[in-house]
Length: 297
Image (cartoon, helix red, strand yellow):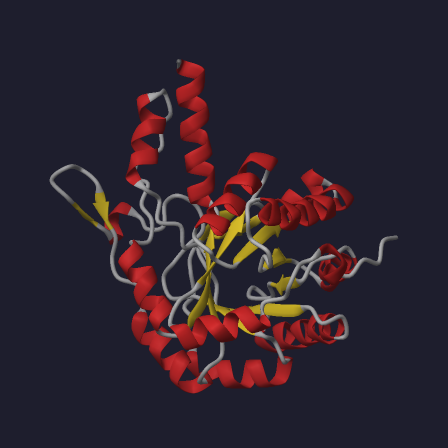
């Protein structure tokens, strides 16, 4: 069984980059990747924009890729960034929605620099206890831990919830204090998948495109007031660019009522306490659009 530190791979954890992001009023992009092509694009974009970046892998994507191959892909991403002209890449390898202690431990032992334990569906006290267990093991290896309070709707790999449950601001101080987590994912109206909102929640423009409602910034502001300079995470934050939706439908796909989180809302969140914004669907849409177009031609 491997026991490889992320530091051997040239990776970093999220502690320093989140502190800088909070102070600077911006958020770090966290991209899920499912293949080499997506990884190449993410690294290229990070170098071009001189941005730190978080490479995210779900439990399902990790099983698909193989833990050993994935470790070398992450190391390769660091070396690739250097080849592209970035002498000191700030790249995190992060487990997205870790379902249990065993999965988080295995990732830490295989070179991950950050893990998320998602106990949001558990009773509160159980979520606290399980998160704390992950934190204790992770911190012994200088790995940072993201936890979650509140439930996001939608589907992402094998993470699914029919409806979202907003985070309760009155719980956050107790949760963070008891668990010792390094960042907290909260629920303020974002959701997984390409349909962030139902048509009934939106207004429809003259062009037929859905206009989403605002996020619950009042909850984010209350959480921020209670936690001070503590990093907050937004899951399900793809903006679902309509040019990709149109391209997919132009070349035979059917993805009606696709709607994302407007970029101006994400920027507003970043100016508050959000230090990490998760993006998965946008990468899938971009790749699907490109593949459909290429095959059609």
